[in-house]
Image 1 (cartoon, rainbow, N blue to C red):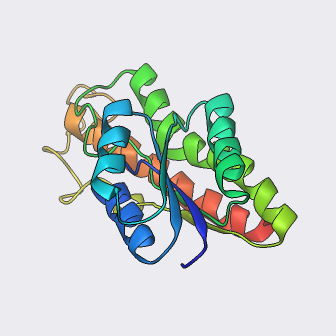
Image 2: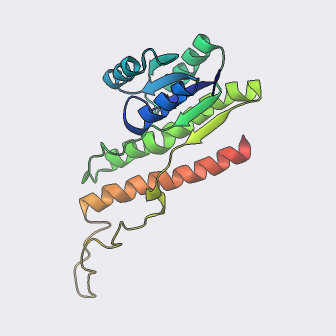
Length: 194
C-alpha cells in the first residue's frame, strides 16, 4: 500500500475506521470520507501521527458532494488509486421504520451511494490506467427472511392478510438485505465495465 491513495467512505467509525487505520499503517494516504463532521474529525485525531490522512465531509448519496470528495483527494495527492465503498446505514438503522421514505434513504446510502462513488472515482482511475474499487456488502444479501425464515405463525387460509412483511423489525432487516443484494449486482457490472 506504500504510496497509494485511498478514499474510504464511512471511515469515521467502526469497520470503515478499521480499514482506514490499516491502510495508513500499510503506507497509504487515506481520505476519511464520512457524513459526520464529528466522527470524521475524531478519526483524523485518532490517526494523527500514523501517516498521511485527510478528512473530507462526504454524503455519498449526494452526487455533487461525492464528486467534491474525489476532487479534493486528487488536488491534495495528485491521484486516486483505491476506493473502499464502506458507508452504509447498518448498525444505526431505524429498526421498525416501515416508511418508504426510510427505505429510500437506506438505498440512497447503501446502494446508490456506492454507485455514485464508483462513477466519480472510476474516471480518474481510468485516466491513470490503475484503480481498485472495493464494495463492502453483507451476508444479509444472502439471508432471506432472517434467521428463522418466518417471524411468526404462518397465516391459515381463513386468517386475515397480515400485510407484506408486517413485522417492523423484519421489514428493516429485509430492506437492508435487499440493498446489499443489489450491491452485489453493482459490483459485478462494475467489474465487467471497468
